[in-house]
Length: 97
Image (tube, rainbow, N blue to C red):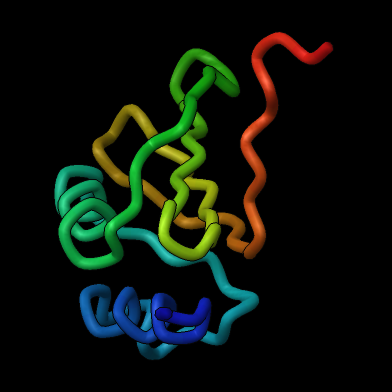
């Protein structure tokens, strides 16, 4: 099982600015490249998205195998930033009893 720290190290290797940043810093890259890395390297899938304002969209990405999650903020200029990450994602039931 890959830990949250291993996922972070994979992301660090793919995003040079993240490798030099501290974990508390926001990490940004080209939107298409970030999407490809999240899918192919991290193994994450987008679980949802919503508009923050007319030029900003937020996405929640989750790695099903271990429950790690990331919140990615996408800008109209083609840049995306990882603004939060965590562990133990639980999907809500669509029709709770």
